[in-house]
Length: 247
Ligand code: BTN
Image (tube, rainbow, N blue to C red; front, top):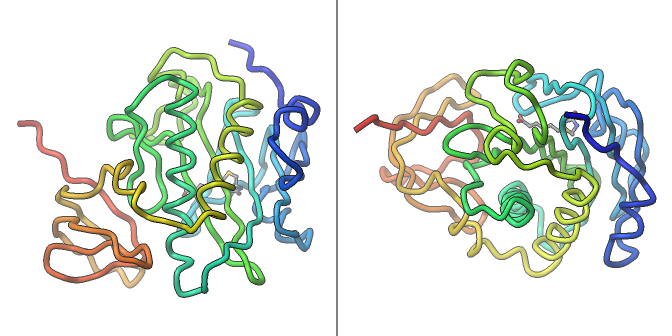
């Protein structure tokens, strides 16, 4: 399958208003790093067909075959105080899950706290949010047409593999940017997150940056975006696994 290429004309023509300024690149080291180094302004976006040094959370790599994924970073200045910036990855996750569900006519793309988008427990997309100045650089990588043999890990999948739908990345990018603007600039309300979050009420194992591993049940999301566990403990950062049973 030959994916359509990213097109600044198609993206520019479809965006609702003048808030977003999108630069389309053939190749970047990492749109996240490149956006940061460009001293971004509110609404700047870089998207690329390929990244030679894509970055994931917790210092991991994020790799994708050229043109198979939608890779972009955008800079936003949310109108909330920094102590609530932990909500941003969750709200961005809602914008991504909502947009993928809309474009594929599905209900099964969900958010895994804090930064992944899943379809049936398989990772379709990852988000990386990094503070910069008064705002946040939101980096999003979505496996759109990735073939089975090109998936980076065996618990990953792509929109095409799960839905058999061929998605135009230009349309998906526009949908996400419009939803992101709405979610983040209109109150940063987490109510909608609970509707999209597949982590709540699940047994989870969380590896903290210190190496400590917590096994508990995910109970709620705090006002600041932390995961509240049944034990009462609140987690703000960690590598989380849903514990699923086969019966
Ligand atoms: C993760 O799954 O750990 C987060 C992955 C985030 C990847 C995106 S792709 C666009 C942007 N540029 C990067 O180098 N990383 C983010």
